[in-house]
Length: 281
Ligand code: SAM
Image 1 (tube, rainbow, N blue to C red):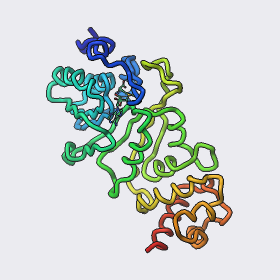
Image 2: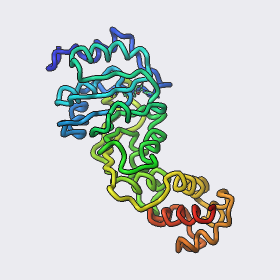
Image 3: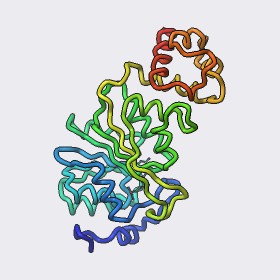
Image 4: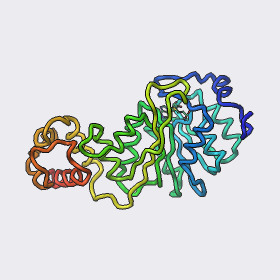
């Protein structure tokens, strides 16, 4: 038995036949010190609904509940994990809602009832970036959550916080930094997971900006996709895929014709997106 009187996670995994599946990006974190450390990074708990993506056998979920989370909504795609999570829900009666489903299709907002929410997850690596982009690009802002506390592969985390003129700077950097203040909190070594992934992981915190530069999220996505889709080319070439003449866009955004995507900061992309929106009516 562990401190919270629940059976060790290894027992849970064995009893529920939860051998990790690569197709679901499953690398389970069984080290209680580390699950507790991530949960602390997601605190304080107070009057908050936590949305957890991919609880798996429930290591991080337990840590959130043990540290005082009064409501956790956990979305898990793997049917095998649902019974294990139901045991946890019974132990912490009324505090854990387990939803079986695909996080990419799941909208937590109706369950949050307009209250305060925070998203926390050791993300399945195969869908980590699309999930993040989805949370960053709703039409209305500020979003329904006050913070994202997410574990990514280190290289993805580095892309999120990268600044212009670095090799990691790209679409996720622009979208994340446009609407949030992202920060890498700490790294977790492969050896902490079962099975160990090939690469180091990083826990990243993203705090929504109250007033991001005004811009349409969909348009900014299209422009960054065109620009970084051919990142070695000059923007006057790569932006042609938008279906308009790039030169007036670059002029309107005060960006030199010879510039490349990786040289343009967030404000520059916002100006480009706004110019594209005006040009395309
Ligand atoms: N939270 C657990 C931990 O820290 O040990 C598991 C993390 S594991 C990296 C990712 C989890 O996401 C797995 O439990 C996996 O089944 C789940 N998952 C994968 N794809 C999913 C999806 N589309 N929707 C919801 N959960 C998903």
